[in-house]
Image (cartoon, rainbow, N blue to C red; front, side, top):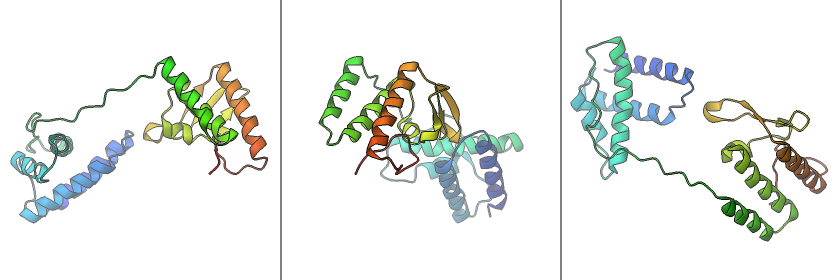
Amino acid sequence: MTADLRTALGEYLKLRRGLGFGLGRDEKLLVQFLDHLDELGHSSFTVDDALAWAKLPQPASPGWLGMRLSVVRSFAAYLHTLDPTVPVPPPGLLPGRGRRVVPYLYSDEDLAALLQQTQSLKTPLRMATMRTLIGLLAVTGLRMGEALAVDDEDFDADAGVLLVRHGKFGKSRLLPLHQSTVTALTGYRAVRDASFPTPISPALLVSQA
């Protein structure tokens, strides 16, 4: 019954992914929404249909219900550009939009305390790895996943740059490094290579089990 909507959904996902969005969760929810319309025998939907589907999970937090409706609303807005008769659920139909967690900014004292705690780790290499990871995160603003995904070949000490291959939306970027950071990473390499003369991983940051 929703064959046309499913075709449109594929085109919608392709368009937005071409702009860098992942949309794994959105795709899953929208397929569930279209399955729900099939169960109702509907080939199109109304605002009431979207609202009723969004409110199905019980119990669920207001933020989750609002997010479900927002996913349908975005898809409906796309459909509306193709067919002005497609209704777009207005914002504010469901209360309790999710709130972003307020980021915690580490002070110099916090960082010093974290670095001090690495002294209690069991091996010199683990200590060096954690100190280097904390320092790298602090001075570059890298995400944890980005830092852990850096390979040894991604660090160019001569040029003073770090290649971040697995950034947000799968994009790569070159990150210029301060000379003090280059010196710290070079020193870490020496400690790492002393522990593992034969590389055990292509990663820049390694440790022991």
